[in-house]
Image (cartoon, rainbow, N blue to C red; front, side, top):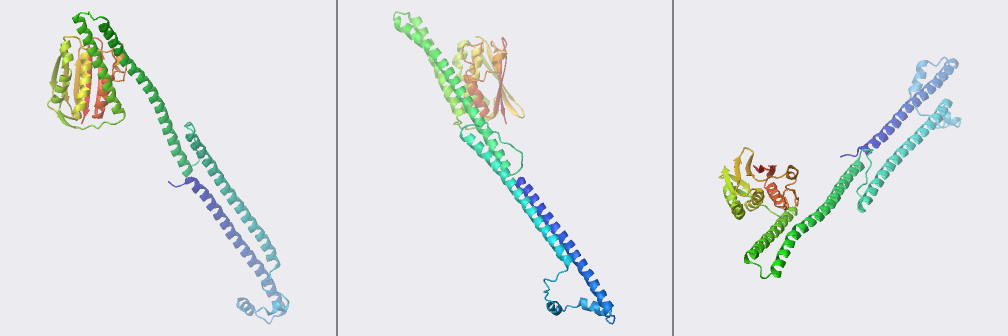
Length: 400
């Protein structure tokens, strides 16, 4: 983009130069006409004198003399006058006036040009100082500096780009501060999530150690609880590691077309033990032979976490429906349980990490947060609807 600011000053300079040139031409024409007028007046006076004193000389001869190109200076030299010095008196005066005017005009022009140049340099210097000041603030880590805009041009374009950089750096700084706070909160949540089962394990181990004569049935119960708590810790750590990989963008999805049926079969195998424990029947219906373009391994992980959540909220001896539907723009998998449901205040937070809902003693969302990240990476979308006492429905859409 051209420098409009510079163009403005260049236009003023050219206008002043054009005005000066026009004035000089006009006054040269006026000066020439005055010279001609004075010379013609003197010639008329000479011709009248000659006519009166020498009537035998015809007017034709006098006109012929005036038109001749003879440059003889004998008469002027005789009286000690040079052609360059022999100037009519009126012309001398006019020449002096015009010379003074032209010099004055040139002085005014030079003064205006100098003022124009100084103004341009002054404004440029001020804008450059603003830019230097802003850059110094950036170097000091201060991203609050605001650059002024009152002119167009390359420097203002530069200011605009610097302002964009300041805004971007401020945004990154704010994000980094937010990330630090988020990391601090996440570490606190992780610490809490791990400390709780570990404390439970320590208590149960102390009971086992302190009571060697404990009945076998009670020992088995403690050991099963310890195993379950260790399984929870293992799940938490693995899920956190996977989420951190998504955050760091170190995961590469290997996508292909897979039948929904083969993905769901592996998902159900992953949660068989929990569904058997609660005696929950899982019903599958719809276009399960249709293929979707996803990373099979990660989609099994995502759907397993969603189905696991549905099982945790389901009542014993109930059912979960998985409905597969194909549409023109997307492919949909619906997972619906008929359990206790999730309060509306918790539903909007269900995909947040470590969000603890009032209806569960466990953390809501660590597995679902991972599921959402996976589905988004597979060009999908997940939503949740729930009513307390009626159940929860997850809808997963995979766009073509």
